[in-house]
Length: 460
Image 1 (cartoon, rainbow, N blue to C red):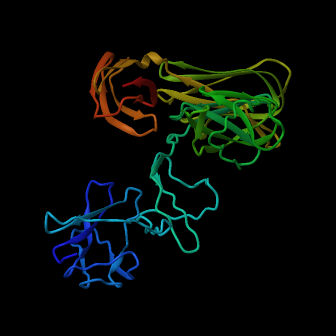
Image 2 (image 1 turned 45 degrees about the vertical axis):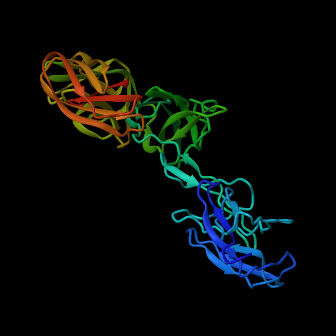
Image 3 (image 1 turned 180 degrees about the horizontal axis):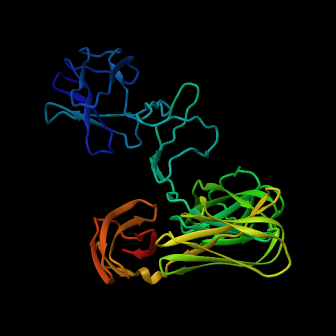
């Protein structure tokens, strides 16, 4: 090789799209050598085109570079090497009688990517817990031994399932003999699981587990029990103890289809104390409430009474928290029909909850079931809702009075995408609502007016 002759070694980290000169071997006054020469031209790959030049000794040499060693190569399966032989005269020819490329396929050292949390595992599968619902996570895998670390695998992204954000609210609980009747307002799940327990201690349902085959509406005596799985808002549980305290938890859930089956993702649930007061020491034939003009007439009839001192009428605005509004003396001991009535002159405009508390001469008391008195739905009704065009919602509302109402649109995860007050006039109302840009799917329309909430599902 003369000084104008050279061998150029180029590296491509992207499968041949780009090559970078890394080492150049040049001659020097008819340099000559073969594979037995002991020289080694060593340089590190730096990813630019500024190659390191190695000039050989002139004449026949046993120490010229027969080996080119390039370190620090990028860790990639798309690595390519290109060797270019050039000479200065057209009548000169390169003659190569042997050529080889060798390397260490195990010298792989990629630094962990910033932002990733490392977790050591010894098997080919692993479970990651404690992730946030409705969030996207990214995973890479690499092999490690005592001295070497492999390159990272391809990136896999996984989005966790969302959970219902709005829990159900227990509205009323009442007793009929040894039965408990529960009524609740549904949350934003597609359905719900109801559990009862003699202790205020519940285990959250396991995601992906279907409990619909483990429902029993007869109380089994103790512990946690599944009593309902469905889309409704009421359940009667029988076989309760006559004087005992129970706790109820309602878990909203969403369903998702996977390759093998539909799965359920549960909310955290909310528990509430419910008291079954048992059978009254009176035989209560009837207990009713009826609106009369601007007041409410509350009547009850007993067929027998034993050791009965007085009655207390209790009222609630939400079906949970009650307060006294009247006391009426009882008949003491009686075996005949006895009729009672009081007037509530300050009823709520929409929904009233009443219950009857009976107190013995010795101070012990028991409570009846809750009765609910509410205005006819014609007072306020969301008749219809539909999407007329892109992100435009039509509402049809009937109301007997003029008032201001609140309208909310929620996605299936319970997130509010629209919230505004609307003016409702007495009679038939039509509204056109321009929604912000939202994805196609199922949404929930909620219109609340004077304590009455109307809910509909729509497809946008």
